[in-house]
Length: 309
Image (cartoon, rainbow, N blue to C red):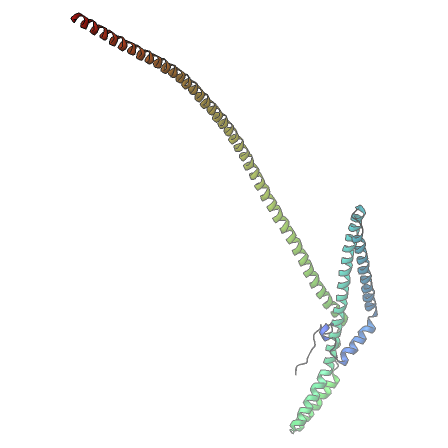
C-alpha cells in the first residue's frame, strides 16, 4: 500500500490557505520549530522593523528633497540619497534571501519530520487495515499460516526503525543545493543583463558609426550643393547683366530710330510745304497767263473788227 507523503513546501504560507485547518502533527512540528529557533524570528522581526524604519526615512528624505529648491546642495543630497538607496536595496535583498533561506530550512525540517512520523505510523496502519480486512473476510487459516504470522509479527516488533544519519546535514545539503541553484540562476540573469548591456552598447556604437558615415556623406553633398548654388548664382548674375545690357542696347537703338524718323518727318514736312508753295505759285502763274491770253485775244478781235470797218 502506498504511503501519502506531503510536499516539502506545504508549510509555506499561502494567503488562500490561511483560513484552512491544519493537522495536529503540523502544529506540533511548528511548535518544535519555534522552540528550537527563536533567534531567527527575532532577527526577522528586527530586520522587518529596520526595513520599515528605512522606508520611513526614505519617504521623509524624498519629501525634503521635493520641497527644497533646486541648488547645488540639492544635487549633493540627491547623490547621497541615491547611494543610500543602493545600500538599502542591497540590505533588502539580503534580508529577503535570509528570510527565504530560513523558510526553506523550516519547510525541509517539517517535511522530514512528517515523513519520519508517517514511516513510524505507516506499518501500524497497514496492519490495522489488513486485520480489519481479514476480520471482514472471515477466512480460516492453517496452523502453519498462524505460526508464520506470529513469526512475522515478532520480527516486525524486533526491527527498530532506522534513524536518519546526519539528518541536519542532509537538510543543510538540500538548502545549500537550492541556494546554489538560485545563485546560479541569479548569476545567469546578471550575466544575461551584462550581455544585453554589451549588445546594446555594441548596437549603439554601430548605429553611431553609421550615423557618422551618413553625416560625412551629407556634409559632402551639402558642400557640393553649395558649390552648385554659387555657380548658379554667378550664371544668374551674368544673365541678368546680359539682359540688362541687351535691354539698354534695344532702348538706345529704339531711341536712335525714333530720332531718325523724327528728322525724316521734319524733312518731309518741309518738302511738302515747299511743294505746296510751288503749287500755289504755279496756279497763280497759270491764272495770270490765262487772264493775259484772254485779254490779248479780245484785243486782237477788236483790232480785226476795226480793220474791217
